[in-house]
Length: 346
Image 1: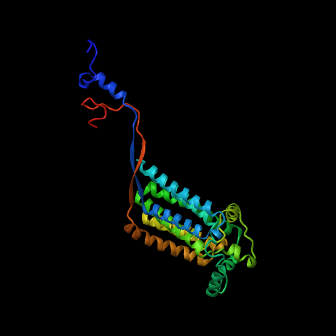
Image 2: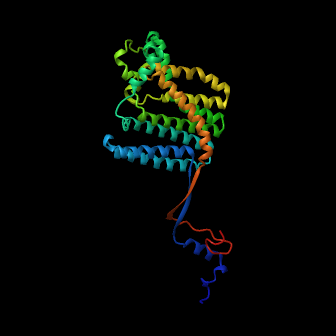
Image 3: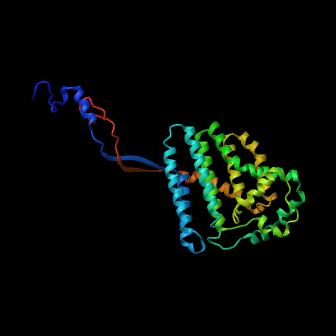
């Protein structure tokens, strides 16, 4: 060997040569592993999406645009899996919990919107006549019509305030539990809320009910008169409400979940929320959104789901899947081990 040149075979003879070997290490292809976690709330949403997708395929003759609906469900499912995987890798508990809250409430909103297009996927008619016969036999009059005698613009405004502000209370209760309670309080609330709403959506196309604002128009004698919140509620009827999604009342079901969550957190908070919950219950009938039967069914369904959720949770343990993806490793210089060979000893 010429004088002044180093033998490349002698890797241990010069530290600068070690670094040179490390810098010249080529990029290679390898596998990366990550873990997918499926909690009960995830499994419930994915199962519901799968179920309604199968219904849309089976009853495609009566489901316009069934293929696009199935595609939407696939996109929602993939989005749910991807985003929960990303969110649950965040170290900050508050950021992670906030992300989950926004995600699950957004999924509920998307699924609710889809229900409006498949209300008659199973039964091509409404059950309002059945409910009206039951309530007429029980009360001797339609309760919604009976309430017309108490209508006053300011009372209507109060009722519509309760009905409209409900949409803000859903995330507000979650924020209270996130900032003042334990993470387990928020997880229980979101799980109860999601499963209860999914149960309501299931009844929408199994027992389609249009509601008194559509089915009892012929017997309505007093127009709704109010102010700001009354105008918002009228707008919601025209643009958001599902024609057929009255039974059971999701408003009353979700309000029951909020009430129970606050009561579990602190009894005083639960009792403080009770008047607002009562206003929401009454407003759904006062405003011609729901029958009394819908209210009772919503409260009962929420109570049932809150009883089922912890028992189901003990049976449905989180599922974990290790996924391996082929990808390109970093081209950055590999660290040199104490033995002088890049990548060894690590």
